[in-house]
Length: 108
Length: 128
Image 1 (cartoon, rainbow over the protein chains, first blue to last red):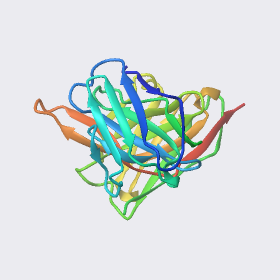
Image 2 (image 1 turned 60 degrees about the vertical axis):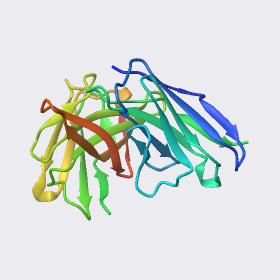
Image 3 (image 1 turned 90 degrees about the vertical axis):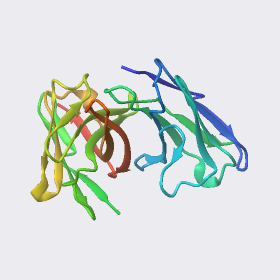
Image 4 (image 1 turned 180 degrees about the vertical axis):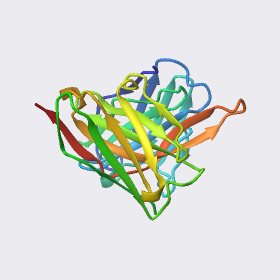
């Protein structure tokens, strides 16, 4: 099973600041088999990014994804009030899909 | 836009079987474009993929749950279902159904990928 480790656990930032969230895989994912989701309290996760860097439909361009191999990053260029949430990565490079433990982006 | 809705008992007794349905609206599960998946979420283990099913019946399961899980699909009801047997308190979670993208590799293998549409989720508590 591929273990995904997300860091930091919590990121305290102010609106307008840049956020960089890390997702590290226990083994190489090969090409670009990683997705990112956003989850707000009481809601289901929402797909933000797939194939490491492709934004899902309707996702603002302040969200971007990068990385390869075992190290991946979700960057939020300028935080908007609605971006404060928990973010999860998910890999599909192995037949057993796994999620990271999440990074909470909170208002400082 | 596709909507998914989970339904089923919110309380299941220890050692019994958890059964949930997911009904799709504003879209059909009878499509060759997607698989249909189940994911659960607990405070302790976070998000955990349970398994995924194609409308034709092909399935993929999380190896850690495979011995206890069964997925099925009923295209006449536009619905797919989860059964998890021999439940314990560790199975207490919010259960989500979701639409699951996939591709066919050059070798012909099915590769399930990301989840692009989720249900609202339903809390299932396991208790004696």
